[in-house]
Picture (cartoon, rainbow, N blue to C red):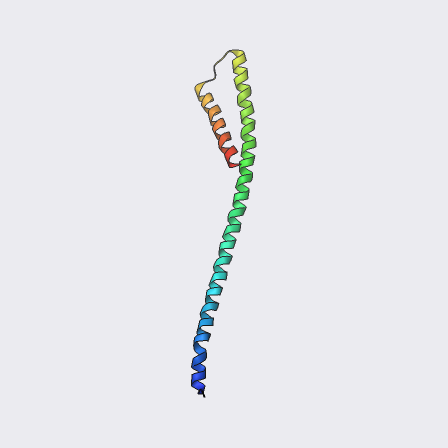
Amino acid sequence: MKSNIEKVYSKLPKTELAKVELGIVQDIIQIFKKGRDEFTTAASMEDRALEEYSNSLKTLLQAKKLTDKAKTNAKSLGIEIPKETQRIFGLVDEFIKEAQQKK
């Protein structure tokens, strides 16, 4: 027959293990919640960024229509578009390409 002390000692490792496991589970839950919140925030920022890319593409396409009109008008008048203006037209095209890739 086991003494009372032996009974207590036989239960200690199980109790200690349960406390350790409970602590780990609490840590997992806490870290998971933090990770989940960070993910949700990032997803929200990504959604907003995609919307902004879409908006910028619309605006850049408006600029492209105007550059095309300017080129047509310059050609019909027989004048050359200044190099600096041509560089800006090129930038419009580059940004449109980038915005289309982000969409």
